[in-house]
Length: 247
Image 1 (cartoon, helix red, strand yellow):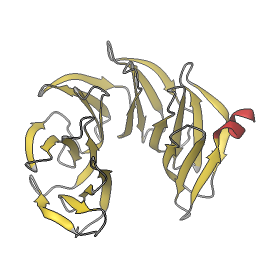
Image 2 (cartoon, one colour):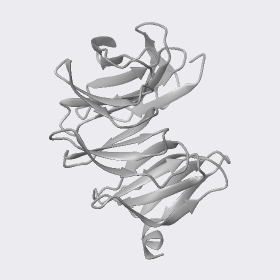
Image 3 (cartoon, helix red, strand yellow):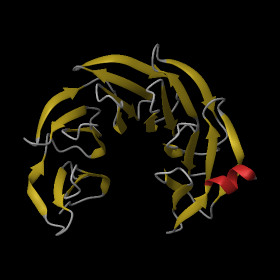
């Protein structure tokens, strides 16, 4: 198996295989039933791979590495088909547009960058620390970025202008998630809270969701009625979104 921390995992179409990425510099494919590795390691250098994301058509994987490169992998050949360079520090986060034509990357250099058809299209500047997480709304009109500078920023994807700064967190923003109806954003922070935000006006919804320790991940249920959070206190929590909204 991997010889260092596993930093990302995604299911492949069909539910039989999982791809993981690791600080050991590799991506690996696993049989989800037997737990055994399928084929050889995927490698393009030895630098830690911090993030991975599956394309909407399920045929490609994009990865971000500590060397600052964004790599596009073909799942069938297990090879790099494109390598995009532009970030000056490691890439913490990657995501795809819904149509699969664009890739966004967030870096330790404080920028997010949009890549399309093999070239850099836009550089998003505003954060003052690492861009740790990214999310794209379903309609494709808004990109959301979270950062170690404790802020969340929204961007108009037509002109790539910043449209709002959500700055209620007091420490690193580790993860974000958008509700299925595109109306609510959830965020997780090392300030020991998760928060819900109204995406239409950028305002927080209700008071912070308090935890006993740092919060590292958030996810909405398929119907958007529940929110799951993962905490450094070794627990995961399920929250009733409607109850929070009534507060």
